[in-house]
Image 1: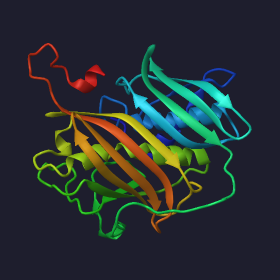
Image 2 (image 1 turned 30 degrees about the vertical axis):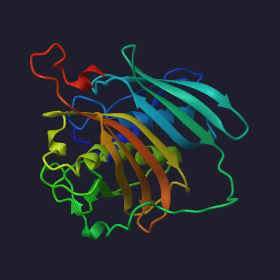
Image 3 (image 1 turned 45 degrees about the horizontal axis):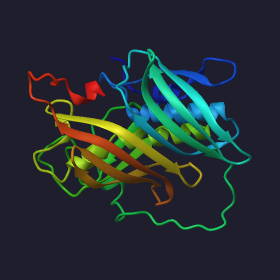
Length: 289
């Protein structure tokens, strides 16, 4: 298994054009040893594809729906269909396929950022204790450090708490290109939202996902605010406001270490029991999406 590295992941975000008009792109994947592709990786690649197809603008928001599992061993094909390109705003739909089968669709909004007319910035949730007080997490990627406030064992079904999770990340290097910085921020939005939703429920934990509990990210939306630049640590504040009927919803914010808000995100995900063994539908739900 190839080791996941920050350098490789950034290269994966930077999808390659397939035709002269810049409407079709190809991308690889890094599954981290799993047999599925992270939805947030596909979201990041879709943002880069839209930025290349509509050059000269900045990605302001992106919303993706993941409709089928993608195989990390096969190439992803991304087709960009512009909806409108005005003097300032532009939008596009990015359709991601594999072997002719649609895996995801993303709607991307791009813009020429303007000077402030008004401004306010009021992050949700109490301030976190800081990265020095947080616990290291075993989610390996060479070139990245990850710590979580108040959670010693992320996978444990016995470590319950409020439906809130603050994760601190530090990257050895930050991309020079703006769209790749935005892609890097978008990539982590899919990693801890399901864990945040499980946290208030004793006996239910991240280590059970894909083994005794069927989970899958169904949709991610991200909006970018201030110029996407940072030094040192950044914080992902997750809050699960609902879990039930086999789904969960999380809203979150990305902040610099000094508390500057640079992005907000949401996630819809599935948390369900596996079908009874031997039934006609006993295949894990995520494998049938």
